[in-house]
Length: 205
Image (cartoon, rainbow, N blue to C red; front, side, top):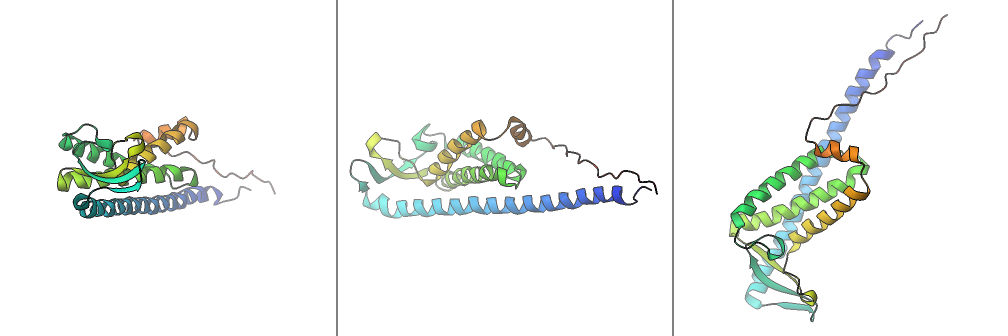
């Protein structure tokens, strides 16, 4: 005789699994947003320090001829590029931040996708850190200067974004499969994969 009730358990298991997955993703999303805000806070602390110490007191040499803190105001993007286009960068940063928030919401909470969640959090924190400056003071505070190679002066938020992009490219090229990336970046509602139904062979008494 066929075992009754076995087929009915599969939809229930799917429902419970879906609820558990949504809770895990929601918790992960909240943690990532809080992480991004924490990065913004650290960036703000460093810029407030630069405004109050470096701006009135002048540069601080850490390693002579190599590294120093030197205050400057940047009306362009990272590393002083494209000066004077602040309003355009505000719009672009808002769009970028919205995309990053959506990606954080879509990226699974599974261990395999942990690097992507961290990367998106870093880039979002850096984008919001510099957005704060552009909105509230019409320029971005930069103060880290690598004199050895005469590198453009940058800030902590720039480090978040640059490091995040570099690591992101590595993972996109060498770690994740094309199918995983298509599902993540498609922005279409992914179809749920059908789980094989649990079946029992009919047993004759």
